[in-house]
Image 1 (tube, rainbow, N blue to C red):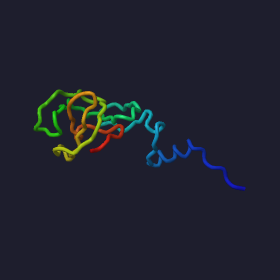
Image 2: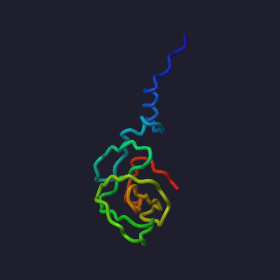
Image 3: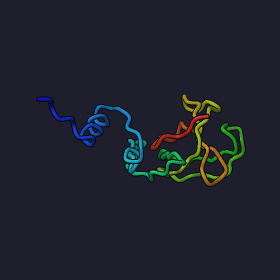
Length: 123
């Protein structure tokens, strides 16, 4: 007699537990990633049009372009959770060239001081 198939929910749970990547709305809902050191753990909206990052425990400057030589447009408070529209390579800061373009406002933040909570489109 054939064995019954595993229920889909059990299969998805085992894939996620073993480090696999699950796709679709169920996987994105309440997505949680390890926060930067000293920051609280957060859950983020499952909005498919934006990625999310959490800044480190410093006031992070928002730059006009993905370089520290560009004009400062403002700053984000420590441990801020912000929506971003894309990830791009820019000036190297703290060992990484990753910069994030903020959603809903002008400016970029360095990936050296932000941890990705929800996947971000790369260009």
